[in-house]
Image 1 (tube, rainbow, N blue to C red):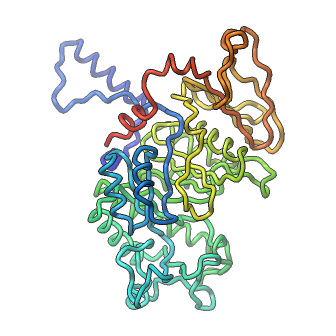
Image 2 (image 1 turned 180 degrees about the horizontal axis):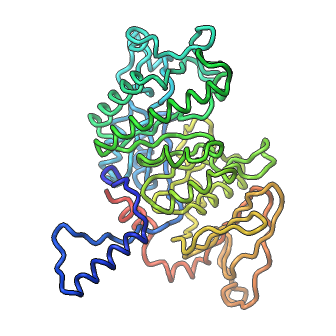
Image 3 (image 1 turned 30 degrees about the horizontal axis):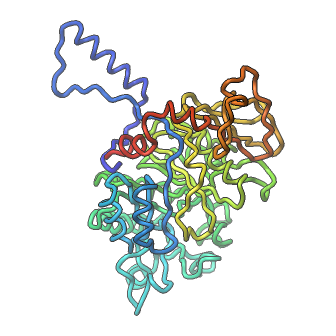
Length: 448
């Protein structure tokens, strides 16, 4: 999507313009060559698949599989050859390079023999900063540099410093253009330093002021880098954290091509509560962006069991749109290309908007199925449509086929933070499915 406009145009506005133009033609006017009738908005398909491939270098077999399976791939900066091979195998795959906004690093591989590596996970090398701009290292109230806890040799940088912002932007834009990436996955667009360190930044009085300084700095940083990348027809997709706490932050930070939510479908209260994604304003902002279909939603659900997998995929399906992509994550370091059988369930295209019942359950209907998500911390029930089955179950016999029954199916009981995914029986789907999922997702929606 590097050439896609980022101007928000609502489908109603598109068709209003079409109506006006047609009326003018019927009145005898001939439209000029400069006038164009916008195409219908792209279809809100079930979530596509993407690969956050930053854990280890991909193998040749993984690259070939990725070209068939994923619509978006994120790779480390030293994997330019893999990016070019993906583009060769499937030019419609969007391949983003990983770059950290907030840190520089000096672990082996980023600094070797006293020199910064050629290809870095950050925008600014540790050695270059140390030698020429030591003031770009953030320090605490005692003047000590801030190393991230749990991530040795990751050093917090002064994301609020205009000189750091400009140097990062210049270096990253030049690399993206030179190597041929479609854009940047910008990590650590975070809401609070507390996830990495309890430090209080020099010049601030407490943790709250520290976090405000970082957020304000990142707001300005994203604008600078996003504008620069947009001018070169490249995407900026930040990994934005905790947007449920700051209304409008997801919308503002996703305006240069999309955004990533690394804790999508995360359960509150240590795994005993409802779904955090639906707290505050986050879900409504995600929903609005998905409906417009002009930028990516890259969603990650960390899954340890089938319930978490169902809840994550179905929550993403509530946001089904032209560029809504979901993946599960079964490891903390993203070492494996992920795939869920639910991504082969064949829901098809959304035929209505997601709706919420008074009991807190959300549901949505598709051309070949239906999903429901219990976002609450208690068990709820919902009435499913007739004639549908759980994906992967054997087709019903003629005598017991739900499609031949006129009686309503029994209510479904959904545990807290759980979901249901139901689809047409295989024979029904086979009769009605005229265009394959890959043709829709890859052939039309992801054309450059």
